[in-house]
Image 1: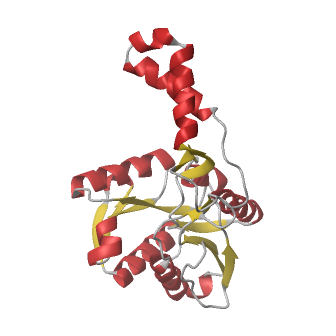
Image 2 (image 1 turned 60 degrees about the vertical axis):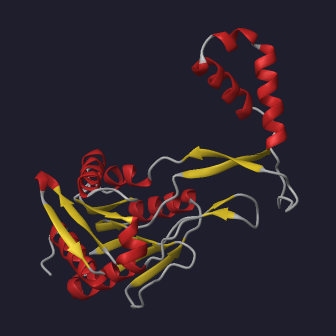
Length: 260
């Protein structure tokens, strides 16, 4: 069987030397990959490990490391892998960027664009805040952007324009209809009820086999903990990096028809 694990975080460039990223280290994904290899034994032929810059990675002859940076690179590599291989399990643990940088403007440029919008459409002032805000937003989106290889460090109050990126996990089921898919949902300072509800929504909307839902306070603070959610309302609370990794690996292998 061939399996895919994604790890670490993606990066979206602001200019050629700066980028937006996140705090994901890939430690949990590495531990899951190692558990998959140990529990799966000879049943695992290859493990494709798609990882962001600096992410922790396993060492094993069966591991094929694939480095990615931007979300579009992750999409391309995943697409190529899933088209060329029959994959039994996908562990999508990577912290994928939700936004890409479409441009940069200064506060002065934005103020001028807002002033033009109001002066050109005086009726919008009396049409309510929603109409006015929409008018200004359209003007700002079309205002000139700074497009250079490296933004000057002397730039006064630069403002980033961000575009939403479609969720990679939403395309996995169509690309691998028979695979066991484990998705991940990370929230910050959420209650257990909120965390479980968000994980359940992701499970249902993406048709994952399992979703591991956890809070940033646990991932980056007190230690690893979260809930492994399955179809039909199944739910397990897991704690500790190695314990979580082993249980996710067991669930993924069972979902792929392999007895650990």
